[in-house]
Length: 110
Image 1 (tube, rainbow, N blue to C red):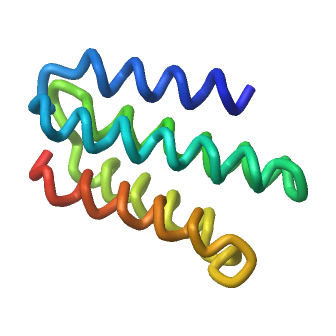
Image 2: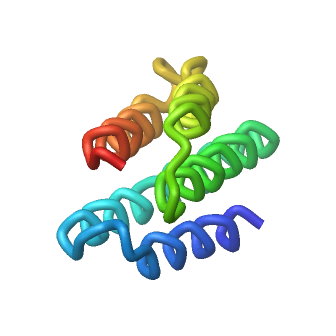
C-alpha cells in the first residue's frame, strides 16, 4: 500500500501543469528518498508509516491542484511535518526528507 501511495504521488507530480520540469525532478528525487525512509519505518511502525505516506499524498494533492487553496495546503503541510516529529531521533533521515519536501512545496509559491 505504501508503494502504491508513493507511486500515485509521483504520478501526480509528473502530470502537474503547475510545476516546472526542474521542480518536478527535485520533488521526484525526494519521493524516492521518502519511499526508502517510509519502507524502513514500516518495518517497526507500519501504522505511522502509512500515516506519513497519507499526509504526503494529501499535501501533494493540495500543492498540485489547479486552484490551490493556501489554507488547505498549509494545514496539510503542518500535518505532514507533525506526522514525523516523534521520529527525529530514531529516523532522522525521514524527518529531513519530509521537512525538505515541505519547504520545497512552500517555496514553490503554489
